[in-house]
Image 1 (cartoon, rainbow, N blue to C red):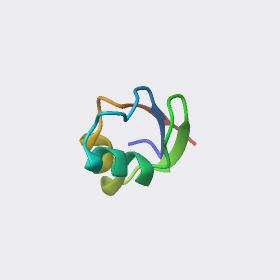
Image 2 (tube, one colour; image 1 turned 90 degrees about the horizontal axis):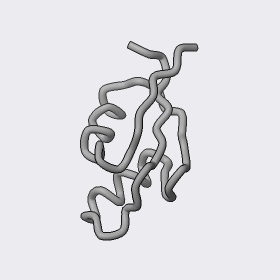
Image 3 (tube, one colour; image 1 turned 45 degrees about the vertical axis):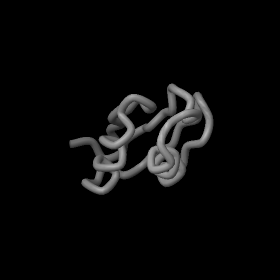
Image 4 (tube, rainbow, N blue to C red; image 1 turned 135 degrees about the vertical axis):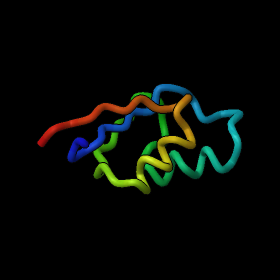
Length: 62
């Protein structure tokens, strides 16, 4: 497992369900191309699993 995950929004949240938009906000995202470094924890993985069609995930070794 990686120490950190780099999550980047690759698609717009327009037209998606409100829960998906809320999940993006909770991940620290809000516009296409924005990235956020997050710890690799089950809670974060679960949020990413809810919006895999909107984000790209890279594992960053520290």
